[in-house]
Length: 368
Image (cartoon, rainbow, N blue to C red; front, side, top):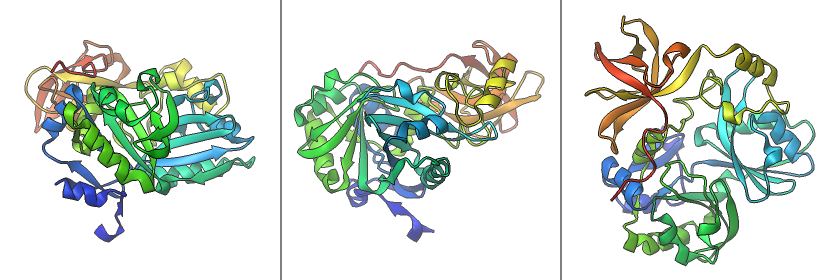
């Protein structure tokens, strides 16, 4: 098994930094360098750098590029201006989701799609299958390294490495330029932690140079490398979906609270059925919940009502480092999805009470 694992360009650097490496989405990835708790608080209070180069990137170009993207994604990419990004998903024919993704508009007839590492081949095949009008597609996943520099001090830590005014990049926008001496770096502000910061899409040959310069520039601001363990607790505190946990081939975007990226102003895969579902109302909804007392919810734990009847399952759960309480997400019957609803998590045979809350669980930054 281990010999089939892919490695990111900086695999050796992470090992030298003492990272615990684990298989994730087919890659050997750093899960933590010190402790999940310390790394989580570093991002909420100061700044951290994640190597998320396992993510997939597809370039879609040409006169039929927008048409293809419009047909396979749920959001309306025709609204994108140059330098803007959009969160979207790829609906399947059965009402579920092939993947969630980001769509970047580089220029007219030129888009970058950023997909989940575990779904690179699946997404490529799915989009290719719908590419009936000959949009130019290129899988550039193996050419690009991706670093996420996240936290309230990210802008201050990075500004000295580029002439681009980082404060002028609004949320879900990006610029392409020179960064840390490397050309053609996409500097993006999409974020998966809620703590603010930037993503750096770097040509592989400059990956180590950029990483080293960020580590050096970030030192006075308390920057540390951060692993996938803290990335998971950070995104869960924000109520962000993780593909394979909270959304998958069987979950509808409407059930998952992603109605806001499902635009019926255009035609897309399975749009008619999803529109009917919207009109009829969904029977279950993805919610966030906070444990009333002790107890940590984990993925696949059962959710029950007071009578002990099953109403759903936990899709993601953890002890929130920011709140010092158990938090989770899961699908429940629609009548129990209103904030304030009481539900119970089955933990080792015990019904532990929890309350449905409005997401996110926390604001993105902590007072240091």
